[in-house]
Length: 442
Image (cartoon, rainbow, N blue to C red; front, side, top):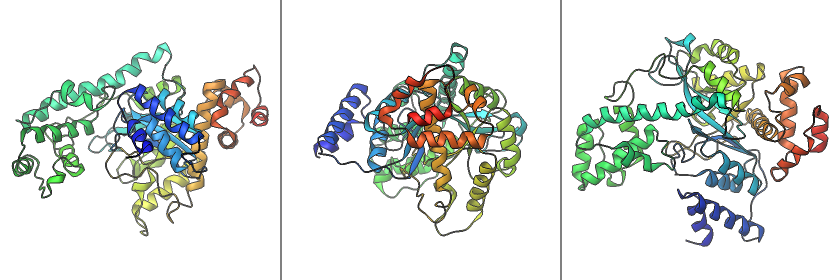
């Protein structure tokens, strides 16, 4: 393992000082000419989970920034469940290495108007995944501190209860949340995926014989594992999750009103924290998403101003099917509503790509739309931090007659902004700055 590889491995340390040291050393290698970085491409990914919620490769915010810069991504964003823990690290790292970066947060919300319809959370009518993007800082106004802390606390309490139920079924393989699960993520923000990994590890510690371990899992969750190398693998972990934690599993409890905050309340929090409320699209196959026009109308009425799509799971190369038709439809609909579209691959499950194949026949016609949306979010993030003139600010409302013209402006800012010179925008902070003056500055 050479020096570069060792430093890249160190980027995933749970020790923040070690990560910072590694990134600075790598950047010194770039400046000295030992490492050559590519020019920016048109590839984007604004939906990369870090190890602060769950990344299948264990990537830290710094590692994601470094990999994105090495891949030449035009804009890159991290998104973690229920926390802003990686925000400062990622934005500092991105600025250091010349990467256009943004930070988002994902959670689950309740949509009362769709209480009887499944949306994007399988088996949970009225519940959908939801996002805020373009956050510039992790500190929120006093009015939203409790909402922020409750997001993480509610999920962790739910996970503790889940483990209690699953332990009884998987005994003698039993977990202690604090000892077995929390250490798998730097700030204790454990997800169901961490719990599955912990069960796989705990079972291996109890059943040291491969055959005995395989028999145990076959008996408990019906999975047949012939390859010993897969006795802690992704397929096992996915089966643990589907068989014990999802609908029909011993750990599953039907969510409903009160289990999650409403989309409306969550959007108020996102706006208060300086982000852009963002609707999430799955694939158009659920009863709720089949009424996407109505769903988006409700979402926009509560503050939604952008939409997130995971393109790579919405098509099969060379195949024209319902998923692709649904993807094309929702993109066309979002464009007609002037909703910026952001995209990404998540990387919160083994095997997911670092970036979508935006050059594919299926995605290439949409790629410019995705790039525009990501530039808008990047511009919002920087302008919100430096000037308090984000995409949804009163200034934006006063200076643009239409959402389309606003989108064009923020896209242009996002294209022109040099990450190393983001702070220079603060020089324009004055009572009546105009869009033209900002463009001229850039």
